[in-house]
Image 1 (cartoon, rainbow, N blue to C red):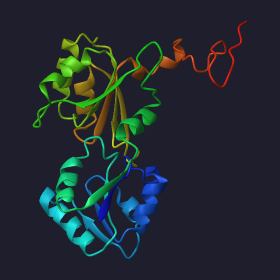
Image 2 (image 1 turned 60 degrees about the vertical axis):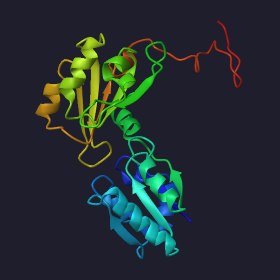
Image 3 (image 1 turned 180 degrees about the vertical axis):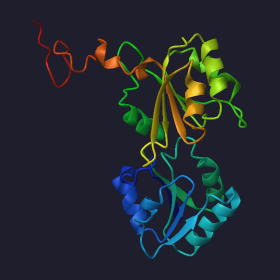
Length: 257
């Protein structure tokens, strides 16, 4: 017996994977986080499927429902926003399901971090500028491990993607400045990436908190920080070896002038 956890993508119903959509359309029972997953996507489920909204449920209640339906022989899917592997709270579900002898298959989805980068027209890993992306969040009610404090992570001076941090911008700015970032470091904020009411805010570390306040963004926002977010980056001479005409690799012999 098993259930399938499907990554729905960031919001646009067209960004679910082909496999995820097929399983959604075949399922007899669909549980979904209705506070985050598009109803337009769920409308594509089997018309005869039982649709269960889970935003108002606690963990044990939700898992019990899944177990009951699986034990009834039903084909059950659980639809998560973005990609389930990042802040998806799936491991606690899997642990309880496994105790009931229910196995779990996970179908990946498009994460909001990559949807936000696309909305900003940004490449997060620019050759000779930064080759690392840190996915993290500011510390709020839920603590972070001591070795993963934002100030320490920011010392790498790479691209940083901040989930679940829209209400903590003052703390973010303080920690980044303490890590040696300049006040004019570019920051891109995408509210509800790929949804019809998506909003993009380009800012700097110095102005981030005020720009977020002016735009009324306090939830469902991805914050991307670092010089890869410079809107003028295309005017600078950062190029990869991949397409360098003098660079030889397994599919092309370099040509020297």
